[in-house]
Amino acid sequence: MLNYLKILLIAGVAAICSFGACNKEKAEEPPQTQTTLFERLGGIDTISALVDQFIVNIAGDEIINTRFAPTISDPARARLFRLNLIDQICAGSGGPCTYKGLTMKAAHKEMNITQAEFDALVGDLVSALDQLNVGEIEKKELLRILGPMQAEIVSR
Image 1 (cartoon, rainbow, N blue to C red):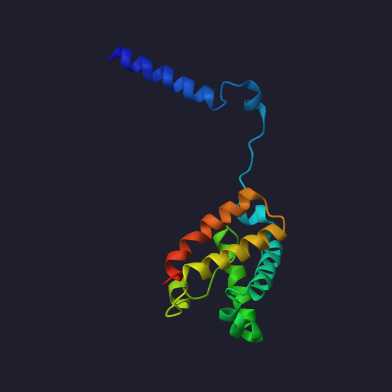
Image 2 (cartoon, rainbow, N blue to C red; image 1 turned 60 degrees about the horizontal axis):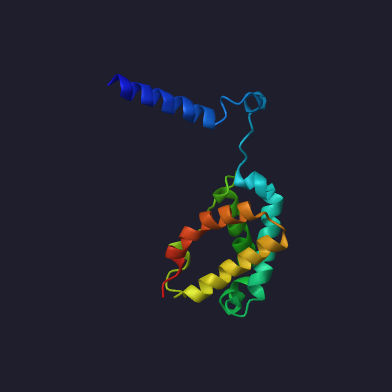
């Protein structure tokens, strides 16, 4: 039993040292503050620009633009769509917004969205992220947050 405790003690010290507690230089560095994805994206201004570019990309995407034509051509619906997207990305990325729109399941009920259409939409978002020079880490993190919605959107 004593040998077992010694091994645990040695393993604990090794683990602490491996995380930098035994490294004097690291111990003297000020603690780094963890920022939210919302902050790393650039806040509401960048998210708004991202959504605007995303909508432009959707409108030009021949795979899905007909699905969005009724929304984009109606100023009231287009405004609500834009604001809901901004709130959804803002809230999902840790920002101060609250998404007030329908659930993805309710919003896409009986639309028979295909996997190809969903993939095109994701491609339009990735393109918007690239057009705004969003970093790879932030891009992947945002896609991981939004990705689970696929199950509620794709129905055929």
